[in-house]
Length: 520
Image (cartoon, rainbow, N blue to C red; front, side):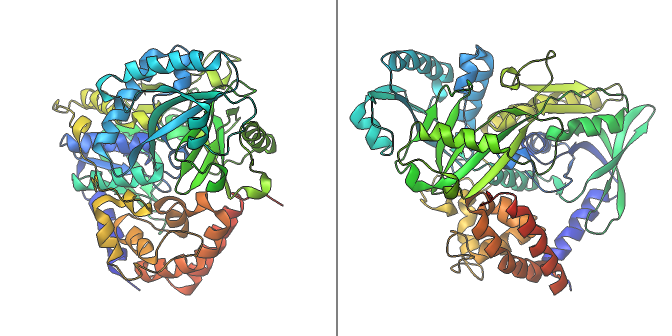
């Protein structure tokens, strides 16, 4: 069976592998890879992006959903990182108002000293944002604190400090960057793992990738190659040089998702110092609440990291110190884990203390590795990487356009529900077959969104749709499992697959989603 969407994949493969020399080849379709690819394409460089699995499959879909300067980095004295991130926060809000919005964060005060102490620090945070500051932080009393967060524990509560940061939908921003990249003539392929690097005269000159759907391999040539594979950068570095020493010391951050009733106001809660010295957030997101995160060193990286029982316990115990009622294990709708690509420091360093700055390294063969950083600074990471890559490859120097570049779907329309993330595309999706038919009664998503994901957003699997094009897996893992059969049927219709493919897709997805649910 063939369909227009099947043909679209064939067209992308043909565009990627036609006998051409790319200016820039980007490997990795997360925040850093998409940022670098868009940066290159908007400068007029011929750019190809290859993603092994799916866009934002890894850490880039598993963040705390904040566009922020990083209050805790200020406490660590990393003023330059905070200033840069606050600047990028302001640009991102201007460039993608359909994906980024202001959110108030309350630091509740239960001691006499906490209001002046955190109040002064947050005034400095405001000042570092300069002209791009969102709203000024301020001290508030007990009554306003309870209005903002009605479920706060009231015993000894004296008020708090209210400050403002940004919130976003991480994998939807990734898909928006993909669409923008394509709008500017870039070619991107998912399900296309790089299996080898090619060299000419000792310098990296391209790569060989496999089409995961057919098993066929293709070779592509490029003037410069950017390794933007997140926590997997060391694997590609060792493909380039078998003796390359690992540069990452990864840690994992766990989040639990619960119903909105546990934080029914319109503000987030920020705990500035937990029992282990971390920051913890409880953030309203898509009519649910995301609570996290942890910081646990992990010995090795994996595509599907799992939360440790003690991490879940830590999050729920910390939440219980501030919320009444507090969520229990039975209230957890989903648990998700992201891995941080932290760059190695001295032996014995605590991962909480490792730098969140991005790092660029260039190997003897000219492979440029971009890693570290965070979603908020994705654009600056891409700009820095492409500046270096253009120098390496002798590409004509061109100014960066991304500081003021409206992203695909740009819209300031005040849409209250989940349609807002599509921006100006929303009306086109709603007009498709199934625009008013819900995929599942406990999820906000329509059947038309599955069709759109396949036709316009390169979704190839049930997981691509339910985990990243839609956020069903993170909002309610059980409901997403129940939505899998219908999602598979719609995808099969769009992509030209048979009943056996559907059955296998449902089996694989339900096994995956089980890992996002707490046992018992």
